[in-house]
Image 1 (spheres, helix red, strand yellow):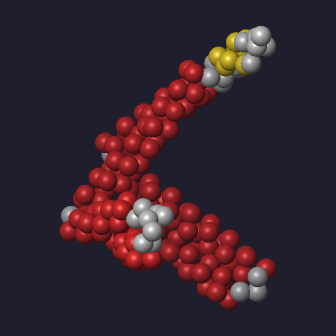
Image 2 (image 1 turned 60 degrees about the vertical axis):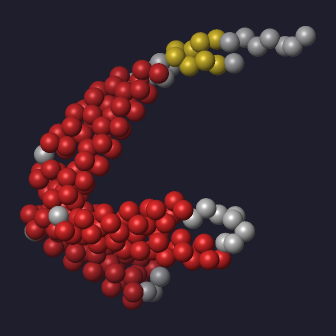
Image 3 (image 1 turned 45 degrees about the vertical axis):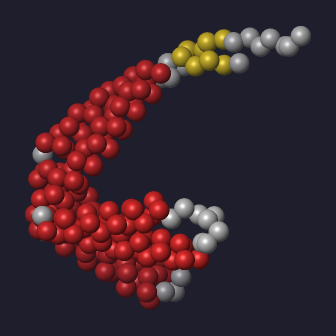
Length: 184
């Protein structure tokens, strides 16, 4: 006869802050959706601070690795970060163009990679269709944003808002569903 295992329900002490944080994040996501200008300025500030922090890291690392290139990259990142922070309006306005150029570059890389893999992968070990489709979509999307920069602003804020809302929903779900855990 099979050994019966006892199942017991254990109440886990899930913090009420998961629920509060989830609700706040969901509300922030909705705010981001309906306030693209403010969101782009905040993103510009965030990117500027990140560039400065990364630049300082590269600059400090240049001494450890005795690398002039790290120092150049660090100084360049610090300069770009300071320009971003000092000109938030201009940075926010240019983010869709920067995003479009990134989409174009990544799309071209994905397309070329898919073509190369298809050429060398005659036995069918790897599917390249999704990579090719993603590359084509990236290129089309990049050109659309360059043609209509407002699409880039709406897209960036819609994606950010959606992520923040989903993060909030996950936090709320974690609070609701993790209050009781089954242990064997």
